[in-house]
Image 1 (cartoon, helix red, strand yellow):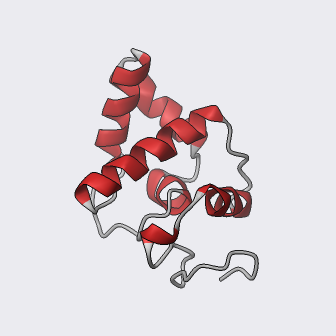
Image 2 (cartoon, helix red, strand yellow):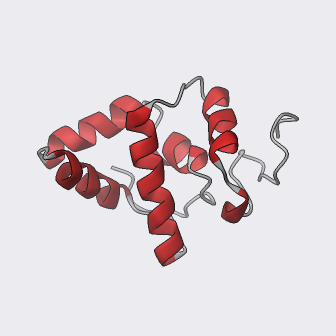
Length: 110
């Protein structure tokens, strides 16, 4: 997709191999989405990467919301709103892509 990112990606820009992800690739993917990664983004991305390492699958949005809720002491509704403020074009479209996930098959994203 992009000549700036030197890892293999599918036609929609998702990494083909999540193990090729690193912080610099995350920054480049975020820049493509017109996002600058600050601490709140990294909190989500690090959780997603850890979940992937343990389960070899992208976490469903409910897992991320649950993590944010418990990690920050937020109501789940507030945590979900916070997640979608960070990634306004959607959990799969932005968070999963920037976290280096293979594009998830059909499952709940909200």
